[in-house]
Length: 410
Image (cartoon, rainbow, N blue to C red):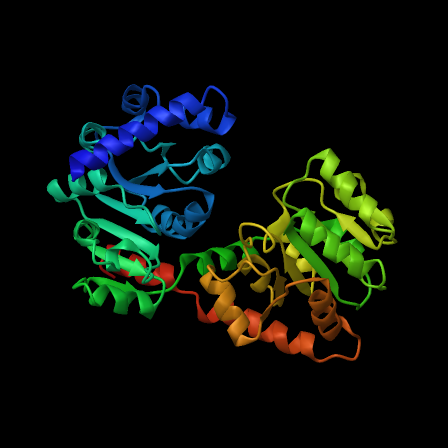
């Protein structure tokens, strides 16, 4: 089966190389892996002790990040080797200063896996959430290198739990320990004889707590926040989200900060065109103009996590598309969260809604009902749901501490 799997990897590589002639993302994917051995050999310190972290993309990186930073803080004698599978993660975090080496993961062939592990000689390997690269895992196992999975989720629909999943189940045996997000995952693994699993939550909760503690002060947002009336912050919004929000806010005397997922000029102008309220763009605003505006449009990237501290309520985009964006960044500030219908594959959204700190909507009518109930001046619901949201994040934190205790014997 491993040889058949390796053939599939080679076929995938061939198809991506063909696609790279027409697609920019595929070109990054290919170019980043060409000559990988020589590039990596130039960076590797043969006398160093490396801990290897592998992530698929940006979201998984954020889950691994709290552990990386704790290791750098508490165990500076180790160096961090960080690999990405996807260009969308690597290209954004390739200059991350807490990792000593950052590169693409070479394609998972038997030969590449053997050469990579022999060159790097990691003291331990940490894979995040869903990364099961079979040849790498077998190579690590054969060399006796401790290997861990963190922030994993297991579901009955996965191949591990199907009648045909015997080969997939063997892959789980390559891990020394599996740190999973919930007790359901522990129970599922037990049904197939995997007992080296611990439910410790999701490290993203620890990450957003750290982000909130280091949030930037933004004078323009501070000026916009004037008065006591609640402000809604729309984070990572898409056109469908913006249509619904514009329809609501064009008829209300509330204020809103919109931070769209795409900040190109055409999209920013499109957002402003939908609103018949006084709008200012963040990069063009002064504290004086922000203090008299009804809508603040964030036309740059990198500050959304700090912007959330200036709001009382959040709308998170993506729920009318492939799925919602990060709801924990606003929730850590005690902000109840509203989002569209495509949220059920996100455990934190399902559980936060169940707790009463989040709300999903199907259309503009439902959005208006939710926002009216939360933003009305005489409503106590905003304060109640704010407390629930903040407590939800606090109650689910601590995964990093548990994992570190296991990895380093605390």
